[in-house]
Image (cartoon, rainbow, N blue to C red):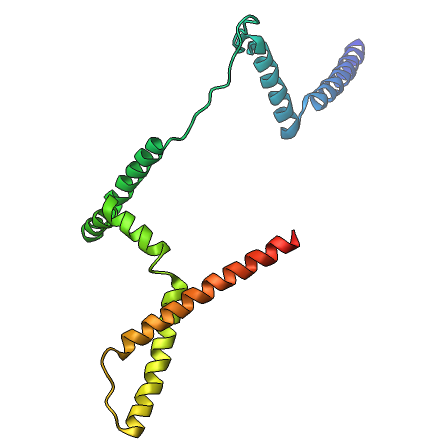
Length: 187
């Protein structure tokens, strides 16, 4: 009988230890999020231990030495050099025909003539005015000459274009003058 009691006691004690082990295992089990948080905390701790203080990376400042700001000026030469460099870079990517045309158009003499012409002769308002007046005037005169029966000179279109060009440019100048006067009065 003693054996049965000792066996039962062992069994009970074993069962009790098993229950405690099970409870310990439950407390040890972690979810993946908890493991990840713990891993991140360990990494942060390692980083803080290995990190150097910010004073190590600062440049020593001598209080006797005055530091003056460095000014970088863009001169005409720097701008011209950068323009040439950009132009070469873009022209390398163009097909051969366009590259030849681009190299001709971007020669200094051609560029200056084009810039001057763009500011004086080839005004968009003048070209638009010249085209409209030349078209409408030519249509009206050709219609009248067809009805009446007289010959139309070949220079008629050119003369009408020049008259329209002058009219378009004068309208542009007048609008700029009047809008400038209105702006000056409002301020």
